[in-house]
Image (cartoon, rainbow, N blue to C red; front, side, top):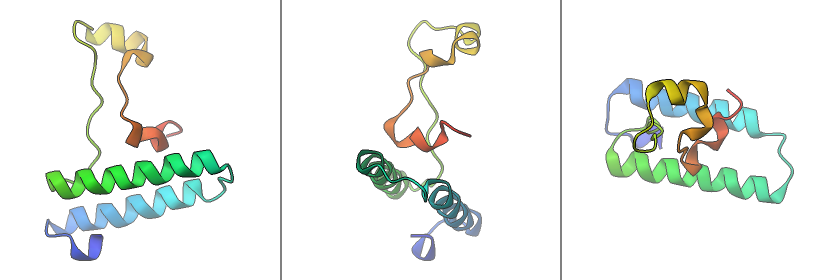
Length: 90
């Protein structure tokens, strides 16, 4: 995808580095269900990047009425997209 990216060179570099990092991080996964989740995550990120022409992950959403202090004290209140599961360990 980075070879044919129409955006700036920095974005193409980000795509290569991100893919390399996540493949390295997930190379030891053997559970078929987890592998399916990672494939879904990769496909979702590719589709979003192509549609919005932005390779960077989208920000997480907070529920209506939640204050910044609430989210800081309890990050589980954030609504995390399915395509961000690889970032749980970072």
